Image (cartoon, rainbow, N blue to C red):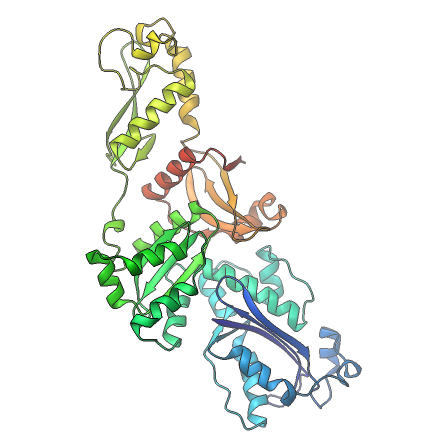
Length: 453
């Protein structure tokens, strides 16, 4: 759990400032679950430049509560949380200073979104909160007021969690939490999980990730792990100390993140998933008569394939569907080994390429059009899916045929301007597995939105 905060102060000499406004959003990694904000009477003058910057003046604070009156609420909402702030050194110092004046030792672990941004988004020109969120296309209101700045930090932190491939933020969170003993905690863990699409991470006591999975229903899938009686499930139950999760809304993004993060983190219980899932691929050749022919073969990384499949039966099913939807010849798709007309010619669904009654040019043109949507060479594509909330969309970016990464957006403006879109995108590795995952997903999901640009 995180307590994301922003503080406005009077300004003045170091360690003599007073708080004039505070906003805290309790954030579970997915959404805000509690919040607190108020003006605070600092009982000292506000520097003129601060009044000009924030708009908070002495008259506004006359009837505001003093810090000791809100201290208990601050302790309660931050209890058991990591404090997150943009320039956390400043906010944490001022907060501890106010508690020191009350004789209370206020101590929390902290994370700084300035430092995280420099590490995870190193290409930005400025890391001031206003310029950073503007460059990332994050909506912001009430700049230099605690509620506006704290909410912008929440949105920024959510983006940084997406970009943290190594899961350093999640590992730090697990290490900071008290570890409960195993048996009773399995039910407690399940109660905290959402029945939504996304990834889940199993951690041992030191925070290390030991298993990564994805599901369209995280709660249901983790329950299956905890109740499973096979050897792998029992091993996981023995070592697990905590579960963290990340909702994606988009099943495609969950698939892509799972593939990349298993390769990067190498969890001890994900041995099988470190290898490729795609054992068969579709290849195209041209026969002596000039007709393009397809063949389903063992996947050979040295040859250029059209699309890959997890097994032979999946590939055959795809070819039969391709033949039926586009009136293609079964023989030229490798589905009819006998000589003479193919079976589809007898039922009038093949236009006669197998006996050269349809010209090679006509058949080849329809075949290439049929398989074009599954090939990304030299294409610039946005794949749009549902996001993590009703007002959010997920996007996968492909440029020049290469998978660049994924992101989330709220406004059409953010995808209509390519530079803003690139800043929102979490960069991911382009490899054979990622392209095959995308091709397979596009093939199975006819309803997704694809935009070429």
